[in-house]
Length: 271
Ligand code: KIV
Image (cartoon, rainbow, N blue to C red; front, side):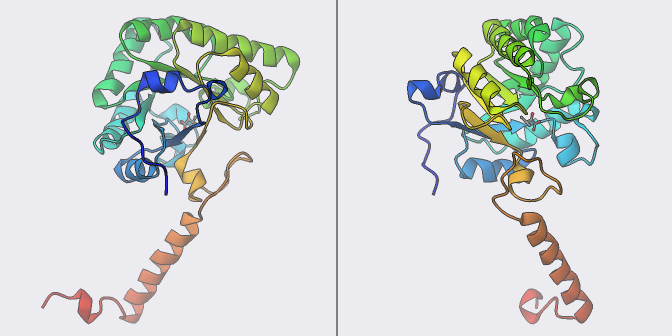
């Protein structure tokens, strides 16, 4: 059984959760709807990320560039209606924080009004004006650096980032700029473990890794990856169940019962 959480998780509590100060690793999992949120919250995760990965994980798109802030607000609201004790992080989608600070605050506000308690955005130093504007509007911000899926075309694919010394140095610098601008935590994705360690050592706010090695202040995985629902998960994913196979077997058993006349039985009929 997971440890029971005494109180809802807050932004200040996450901000203080550095492992080097004795805090246990943060656990973040994505969820995009009410059943997913209930599963994550009952399991005792610290943060639920309503990620823009909803685009490829749930909505059938090729990449995360296809979802608007309105679509994200729809999914944030479904998660928030379950009133989880975990902190709800709303992911700002591509083009919702790239134009100007006012537009960014309006879009951040949409996710907060939908029920998120904070927002996440991708990128480094070039995003700091947007981070400052959000923080000035009382919207807490989580950064996201390294392999940033919204940059898929600029990166030439989903490639591990920070492989050489200069690229690693730039990532540490980017993380520092985000923290300095007011981010309360930073996701570090798809980097060698040494980069995960270096960014974590450089920051006073926690890092949450995904494919960034074991030394970050927390770990995040996509719910459908860890449940074994997605087809081709990345190397860094550990599958804790094979629910995709189990679901197919269940539906196939139902189909067979219908076709053989075994469903419905007497017990499943109103008299
Ligand atoms: O959208 C998402 O699922 C994410 C995680 C991979 C961190 O941003």
